[in-house]
Image (cartoon, rainbow, N blue to C red; front, side):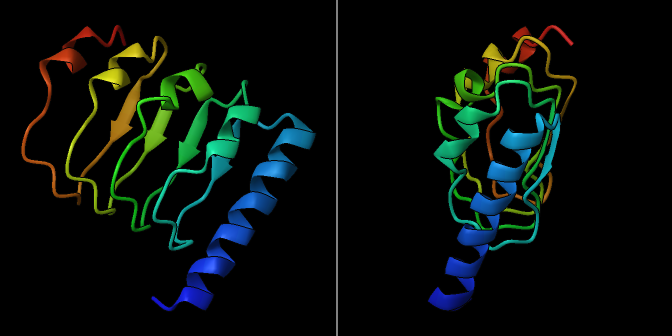
Length: 117
């Protein structure tokens, strides 16, 4: 993916996040944008329940994600380049579906057993 295409994806993600913030959306689809990181600006979406980030090039899940979007129930991260699952994902109190297929994960942390749902 060229730098221009990646930049377009980042710009489109920022536009969608801002639109979701303004409308109070509970669902956000950032799939197929060529993102390499999960945007920090998600922290402005406290009521987000569904976050779709599939088919990107994300390599890591930030430890802060559970604090940024605490109401998340569905997190789609399939078909990325993720190699590790952080223990911090266990902090999602309402998470019902975590989709991580199609990544390069070799170990699932025991902490995920703490997920209530």
